[in-house]
Image (tube, rainbow, N blue to C red; front, side):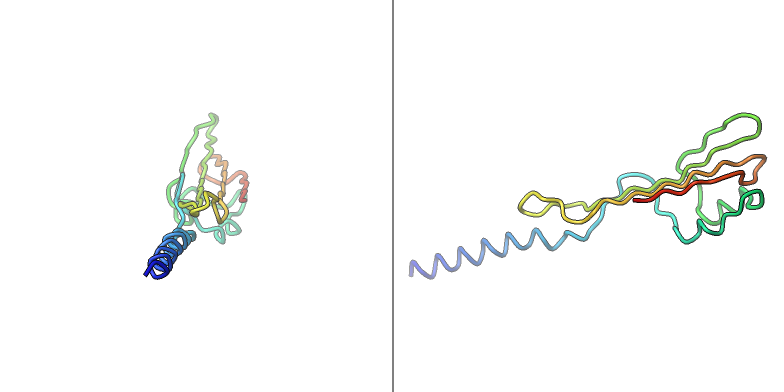
Length: 116
C-alpha cells in the first residue's frame, strides 16, 4: 500500500514537472508589430514611395519628423518565449528586428535593417 502511494506521488510529481515544458514554444510580443522580413529587399532608394512602404509593412511603430522634408519611420518588433521551465530557465531565444527608413519628400532616401 505504501509503495503504491509513493509510486502515485512520483507519477504526479513528474507530470507536474513536465507540464511546465509543454508551453516553451509559445512567444510573447514585447513591443511593436511583426513585419515581413522578405519585403525589405523590395525597398529601392530614391524610388520606393511612402505609399509603397505602408503597403509593404503597414503603419510604422515610430514616426519622427527631421525637418527639411525628411521623415524617419521605424518599424520594430520584439518577441521572447513567454514561459520559463519548472527549473526557472528560459528556453528559446528572444528575437528582435528593426527597420529604419528615411524619407525625403515621401520617397525613400535610405534605410537600414537589423535583426538578432
